[in-house]
Length: 223
Image 1 (cartoon, rainbow, N blue to C red):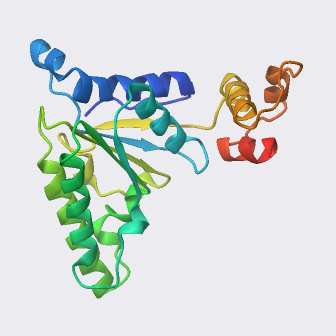
Image 2: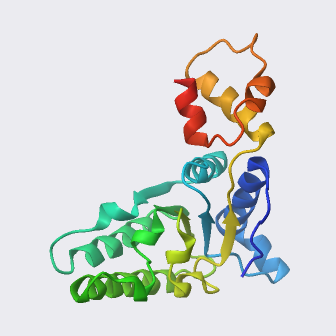
């Protein structure tokens, strides 16, 4: 398992780390083969709500120009027996048809919750079947398959340990609240999307006044 980024790591460093893992697995897998290194099959981004995990993941994917299938874990659930597992298998099948491809799970804890956290017999059995399906599909990801799983969670303590074994989500990256430099960059980025003339605004000064703001909080501020 890769050593997780701990303490505070800038958003630029996190984005670069994600991009390097994606590049080695999907863009230049021959480099890994030449070096005798096995590329990661997946990455888990974890950290507080609203801290930009989804944004960082999508930005890294977009920078490399890779096709991606994005799904929120809760979107797959169905009240019909076996339908949720079927949807999950279909999702992986579609991703394999469009390789190289990133399969991006937001709120992965909804699909891969620890097996001792079920809320009743029926719910527990559904969760076990779903987790088993997810593990089986991820075990099919090997070198040169052209598929990479990227996942996010606000609750890493609820993700089953089996998902974090080598060959699955074997790279862990912690994403913390943005620091002052990160906040200034985020404010500039939002200003550009809103067509705000920020030439006369000192974003560094605004960033100093928004300590402890999340990415979501900064977005709301710009609105």
